[in-house]
Length: 364
Image 1 (spheres, rainbow, N blue to C red):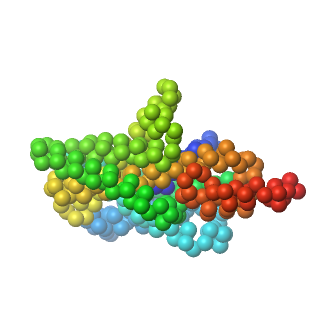
Image 2: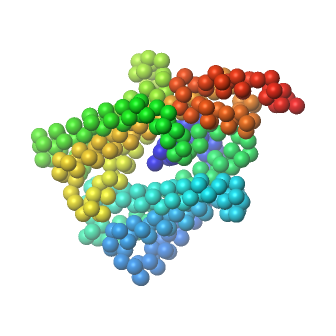
């Protein structure tokens, strides 16, 4: 769900996909696949054993994959042929396979686990309601995100400055460029959160239940994610750099969303995998520690990366004029050379950006 966090945490992306005209189109793009998904569920229920969790997840993934392709096209405002030709095979397959199928399966697991843990509405005992909700909610969420990614791609094709495209390429570059730093931010919160989850569950049986672990891991991993984000953002003074009520309110909003919200989402996705695919319980110490460690590692690593991308965007706004950022050549230099360099764009990139040749080309 890194793409989802990027679309809301990074200001340039958030402003682009929350304009009123975009939101109106997005509502229709979400509404139509929801109706289609309901019809597909009613049809599939007659010919497929949707009471089997694996079958349900495959159907949900396939519906979400088709939805992602259509919604991306609607946001992109281009035909499938044009999209395939201009965006390339790799990006199209990433969209269909990751944003569509994999993300849809993850969301379905989250819905099933949420109903089981919070509402005691177990899919294995009452399959119809949870199955329908798992398919429809996953489909509409995928439609929303694919549409927003398509809109960002449209702006990029039109020459708008997109410093961080909401896919996994930037994160992979970050891991390759700063392997040690990223590993530390993934490992240390993982160990801390897993230790707390296992220890408290050992002290009292109630703390080992799914609901207690959901609350515990959400608070622990979500709070560590805020720390990682502030470190990546390189905010002067860290926690103490939050000056005034506005600064602390911003910190609280980030702690609430995406910190707590996505920590809970990841926990529910892992719990859904354990409940409905592995058919095991989450109360065991090994499972508790594994889920807590995985959630904390993903949240800390992702949020550190997003904090740094926020820092890069802030640096670019201060150093490079917005009009110059619209030049595709300049954007290519900045996106490649400052993928994960600390302290903003490297001198070589800035020298190329501010060279007389490029500046003259801008005014020609």
